[in-house]
Image (tube, rainbow, N blue to C red; front, side, top):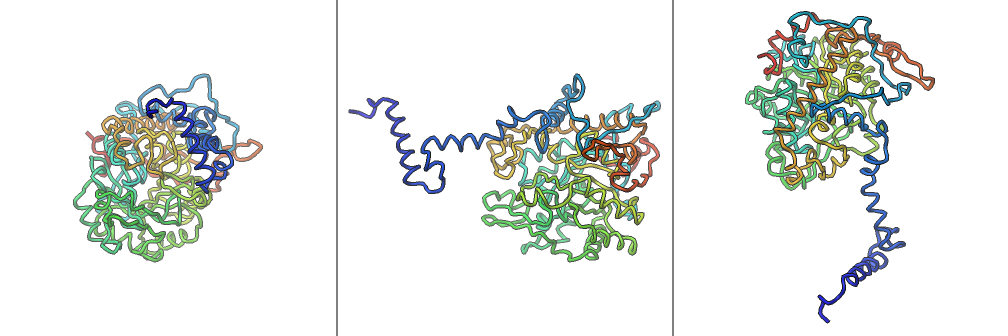
Length: 516
């Protein structure tokens, strides 16, 4: 009898028999498959698609983390310029712990004739200038209070990075490179903040040490680099270095990061360019002197003693960072062990309030641009952040959502189905940078427009005018609300602000497309 004469169902039985033999007598790794051959595989299949089943069919609109369905829907609709309103009232539990209330004014702020926000309803620059106090040669005023946070090329795909950079150019925002170096995909016209991590990628010598000559050359060759950020730690894994597996290092990544092919690349937890707080200040000042750019630091917050040392040295020397980016322990796009992502460093509201009080006590807040990062890409959360002392916010995952991320939470596997966080060429091909850049820009513009409207509703012209008394928050199990100054035990220092028109006329304003 020829093989072609064998019925299909016999082939099925033979295949299942082989699987059963393999499950019982060959494989030793899975007890379930051994005890329940064939059927046991169904368990692994259901487990593998469990997150998707819960996301789309089980979890309610407000239940998921890190971003629930309502939050994701607002970003998607805003990015596509679709209706992002809610009907029939909120379905949020407004008595839940940590719920934020913005105290509106009896009479909202009304812009006068020819006000910049009557001409452009999305114009919302930072009220402070990076590098102004320290007299840097090239001070920088971010033209947007919402910007793209640090995400490296290699972590994100080339097309995702290109989409983000083209998008910030349209929106007048800035784009933080992350520690992976400056790639061609960061070079599409958007303002750049170049991040220096412990691996010194792109500005390292052959031994992996920091090279000042390479940094200066990079800044001189790329005038769109507006500031330098030294990463001390990040919310996803503070105090822990990273590993870039050899399998993910392409020739392009090798060239950009200046790392060898075929070998795992380790980012140590500590910097080698400085050893202590005085060394950090010296490092900051040397970079600022040679590049002329504002220089800041980024960190997740835990212990405060070394920050107090930094603040005391700033008073003693008149030197120090021009900006500080405070990352929340909520984690972010960086892959990390659960022990770090879940437990190391404080959530943003606690970390920021602890840090801000260090500089407030020493009357240093006017010298520093404070940047918040940690799920703040929504107008009400931004209002809370500004009332606590933030001057700008950075968004990472919100920006990813705007260009197509579906919160699959497989960023660390190189199998991102939306092509955003993978180096797989086939998966990346689904991203159209021309379209996705418009969506990132539209999300930023919608955010800015609604944030301005919330600000006006509170009676102010610019969100820098928010105070701790403008926000109430549910603080305990009895559902009592408290103004932020009582909750976090400080009063935000006033930000020097005259008018939105003066910000528009500032010669140091970034996002040149906004000044035409």
